[in-house]
Image (cartoon, rainbow, N blue to C red; front, side, top):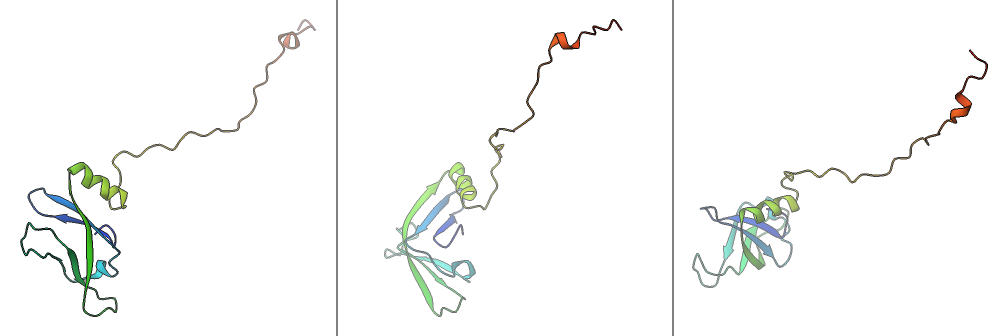
Length: 119
């Protein structure tokens, strides 16, 4: 679960999907079970909704329409984990350089450093 409206579905065999719900599914993160309903009844059919039972004071099953199911490449999968804060990026970018206020450089007058006393 990425958040209450975005899920990752692992279908086995390196097949992963991003499921986006049409609205937030409150209490989904504490649900005991989650299932996908479809009108066709086929495993490979189009899923119409996600059904779950929440334990946050809501009785009965909740159903949330599915907006989109998208197959992910390994790169897409990692990008989503990073985007939703579930994984740290592998390359951490250094902060942008900023100006540092420093001391001014003062040139010395070569004539002022001559020792005219002969010592």
